[in-house]
Length: 204
Image (cartoon, rainbow, N blue to C red; front, side, top):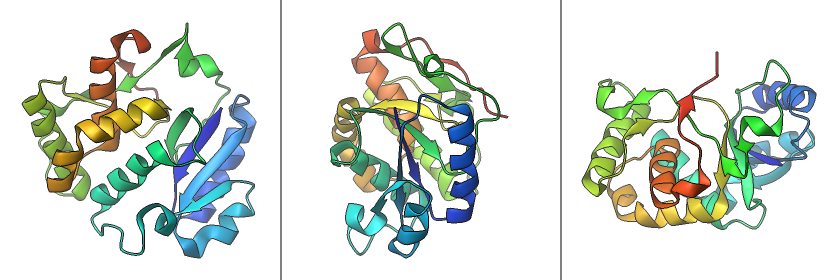
C-alpha cells in the first residue's frame, strides 16, 4: 500500500520513513508532496516526490488550512497517487508493528475519530478556524460532524476523495476546510457499505 505525506521538513520525514519501514511492512510505496526546495533531499530518502508547485501552481494559498485542503484535494486527480492509499502527517510515526487490518478489514475501510466538531470552541489558529468552518458546512449539508483530524494515518479512496472535493468545492472556495474531517464525514454518508463504524483514535 502507498503512504502519502505533505512535508516541508525533510529531517522530520526521514525519521518517520525509518519508523514506517520498520513497523508498517505492508507499505511498499512512499509519496511525498514537498516544496520544490526540498525535492532532492526527500527523493534521497527513497520517496517518490511531487512538488507543491506542480500540484497548485506558483501561488498556492498562504493560509495553512487552505493550503492543506488544496494539496490533499489535488491528490484525488494526480497520477502518482494510488487508488487506495494511506494519508499521513510527516511526524506521525508508528511505534510498534501494525498490519494492514489497522486500516482495511473485511473489505471495508476503518476510520478513527477523536470527538465532535460541535464541541470544538478554539479559535486561535488556522486549524481551529478550519474545524469551525467545516462544522458549519457539514451541518448545512446534513452530514455528521465527527472530528477526524487526530494526527494519525487514515486510509483514503481516491475516487471517493474526488467526490468529496466536488461536494464541498463551493464551501472550500469561501472558507478553510479540514480535509480529514470533510472526507470522513461525507464519504461514509454517501457510501456507508464501504466503511466500518467510527473508532477512537490510536495515536499517543
